[in-house]
Amino acid sequence: MEKAENNELLLKVEGLKKYFPIMGGVIRKPVGWVKAVDDVNLEVRKGETLGLVGESGCGKTTTGRCILHLIQPTAGKIQFNRDGQWIDVNSKSINGLRKDMQIIFQDPYSSLNPRMRVKDIIAEPMEAQKVGRNRKERYERVEELLKAVGLSAQHMNRYPHEFSGGQRQRIGIARALSVNPKLVICDEPVSALDVSVQAQVINLLEDLQDQFDLTYLFIAHDLSVVQHISDRVAVMYLGKVVELAEVDELFENPKHPYTEALFSAIPVPDPDAQFKQIILEGDVPSPSNPPSGCYFHPRCRYAKDVCKQETPELIEVEDGHKVACHRAKELDLLGLSRLSEQTGA
Image (cartoon, rainbow, N blue to C red; front, side, top):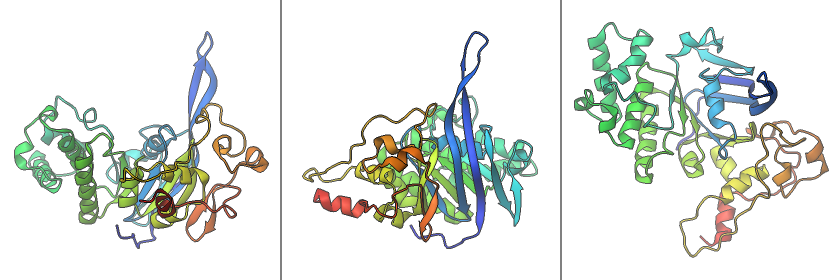
């Protein structure tokens, strides 16, 4: 995918946190906190696709939902650029920003109301945001969107149970686009689909991005998909962004040991390849009791004493390449191509 050349920012996230209470005791009061998102900073440029990756439970989806205030953040500042004016995204302003910020959900089976026809599912956001003068105009818009996502007008009067998973996800995409958003948060939009259908939906998202001038925050754990669709990639671990770079730079020149381990877990399509995977020791620490210093140090084979004692800041070590690692400048980590050479692929 070609790089987005526009450097104008559309979204800024600063110090985003989301802590969920752990209730206990007779009177059910908080006795601890699950730090699902812990001080995340992100910037999304207009017209780009920013990939957000990490293993399950790292806080990717919670980050996306906090940005949209589908989940109320514990702390942090979120700003959206509307026609050159920065607007703070909060519980008061979010209703006015719904037209500009939409989401495609992960599960196409549970995200569509089974009691509603397709035309009403797609038209509902338009009615809520007062897009279109009347129902007839909205249904005309629905027909256009169905064609744009690869369906047809004859599907308008059907119910969700009459469609396959890939078709349902197309309906979910059409619903997200119904109010002409500028930013679409794609929350693992292909992870519940068959591999062949995944490719179709990814290509569709790329076509729609060009057609409707969209900006994506693409949340996923499939690194092959992220490499294909993203312009830049942010890697999350235990609620924190540990690395951020242009997609080619990240995949060829990772600076964080966790990123290197993720790349080594990508399946190689060669049954004869001798593949040496980097096995991380131990389990993922609990977000309710994260380790001191660098959260990754208990599983890191490069960790030193400073990693156990001091929390690394996310700093720029090369042009556009940020990493939160004390040893980023001295480690020579393996990128995807060098890992492939080791396999003989």
